[in-house]
Image (cartoon, rainbow, N blue to C red):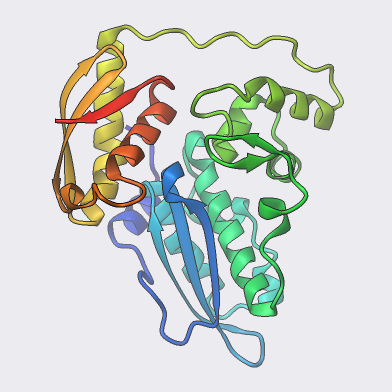
Length: 278
């Protein structure tokens, strides 16, 4: 079980300012359902450049919901200029801390805030997410510019920390060497020649981790939309699940719930997992 603070629990169980905001004149969207996390932030900014209201919609874990909730509380009454000074560290501190594996949730909140304000100003989307960046992590769509920003703003020292803050390298792992080279350049070190391969899990270990991920990460997200999931079988890299409630009605969508479950299990358990529906 993740070691969440009381503030994270409170904001997750009773999130503030949820749903579209009437009169919103600034909207920032970051993340992607295909990556397992997505956030849409609404702001209402008056003529004096003061944020009068804020709300959010998100598809994500407890940390994503809590980070979004506390962010909407933080920005209310702020000037646009002051809001732009909010960092992911500020969001994390307001929650009393986040598990290191969940730091990317606070980064997502910071990026959504920047995107909303840029839209309100009539500027293009956040540059580090869309411009002048070389794609490094294909699984999560993370560029070298995003990785460099995470390193410099948060003082990151290891590849694992970069994954925690950006999710880069958290699925198939093919980009880990490239991430290590970017980190080495930023730290002015010699690039790492080779990374140790991830240890293969036994089937029992795999089943335990799949169950843990379903219970702590996937089920809460599906439950928020009226759905549920049940683990049917784990046979090597083959994971069979049963989708219930509204989840069972989503199979015709472009990005199916099965795809999302598979993506999250690949991120949290092993990169070769294939999810099937019973």
